[in-house]
Image (tube, rainbow, N blue to C red; front, side, top):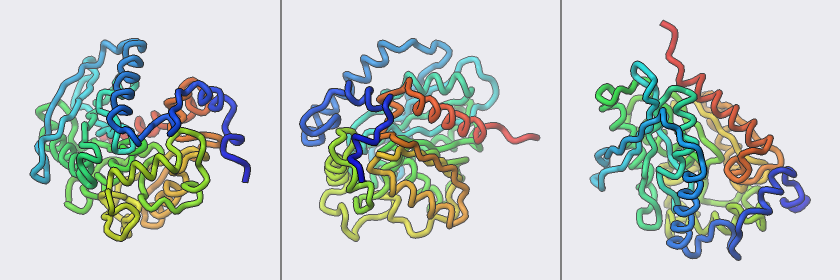
Length: 326
């Protein structure tokens, strides 16, 4: 087939040309510490250059761990003008489960809060390699349990909590949904997954095709999974709470939204997960974006494809967070 670079949407291609690249791509996981610092600097510069959303307040909370580990920091964003118990999106940031932090998404999550009149609880889950999987999913479970328990005191609606995540955080969101189901917790309204990282085995066609783009290629993904799982990566010793694609039974999970680009190494594992969810009776809304690489909406937010995705994503959240008719 043609090289992936030749298939990129023109707008996305121009954006990609402007992305600073190391010899190991945009995200150099051969030096995780340095890349984390670079990401923090980039997020700070982005936040400084974005107009603030004064109608959204930010609160810092801590959820007690479910597995005896440290408490889980949760960054709660809420619109100050909204009334009544607010629906909540439990959010998991991107970064391949090795990079990133909850506050990195403040600019666009604040706009989402203001537009939808909902709260967002962004989870600062533990990262690898310091904490191996399924530590991040345990943090997600603890944060969900805390939200349900404290909803009334926080002015939130504990019956209207959806789970969402991006890239590595999409994988943590999917794993959290599995933990909630298996431990008998209140079912989330949905699991909204942006190009989620689901399968440590890296044996799909797309995981082999997507090389040389510099945006979370196969080589980067292999390093990420090695950090997340250590020597377990790709072996039989991996549970679904570490890599959701390993789950055999997907029944009883909340409705799913899954979106992924055609030129994303996660493409085929995401399509397969959507197909298997549907086969187990789970409602699925699936979107495949032609000519789009991983995280295209972040690198080219003004592109036509990104705007289409943002509109679709926001509409899905709005429909599912809406209070049922009395």
